[in-house]
Length: 206
Ligand code: GRF
Image 1 (cartoon, rainbow, N blue to C red):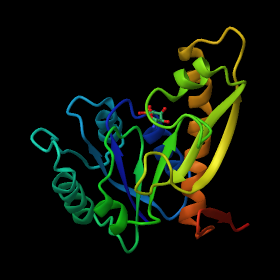
Image 2: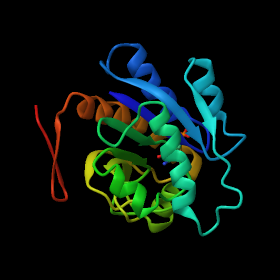
Image 3: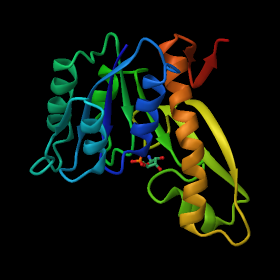
Image 4: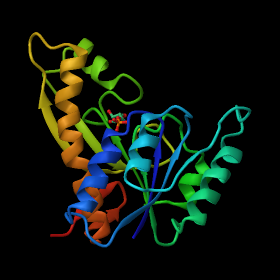
């Protein structure tokens, strides 16, 4: 399975997936390319350190032209063998919304990780939203990407209790620990052909 990872930031989820592949926990899969929407994303260095092809696709000048930008992303994915027929695209801290055309082309083959128990607290600052809302439990979600914002079919979730004296930073750190366990697990299930999409439901074949 050829994997492409789209990033914009730190790259700790990218690193956790790379490690799961290198350790053999995820078999028969390779990250073919990491594509960043930001020139200074530390995730690019994570890729380079592991000898993975990486590319920066500059979003400057593509305001209101999401599909034109996404075409460049798709061209880059395809060039590295991550095709709509047999590839897997992972969003890992990617700060752009995919165009409906991208979603359609790769439907059922794009995953995202979000730091809340969806459908609660979609969008940015999910940990802050949970804290300010007074939620007692939050967590993280791996889901397939559809046309909405964090609305696609849920693959796996992990819960994280909110503590009385929590800060956004402390809560984010505890959620991130779960993200690093959950995302590779979802990728492993996909690569092994164990995820079956049935409407909104994702069945896990054991
Ligand atoms: C994570 O919190 C993830 O859930 C969200 O963006 C953050 C990315 O972190 N989508 P990193 O770049 O993987 O360290």
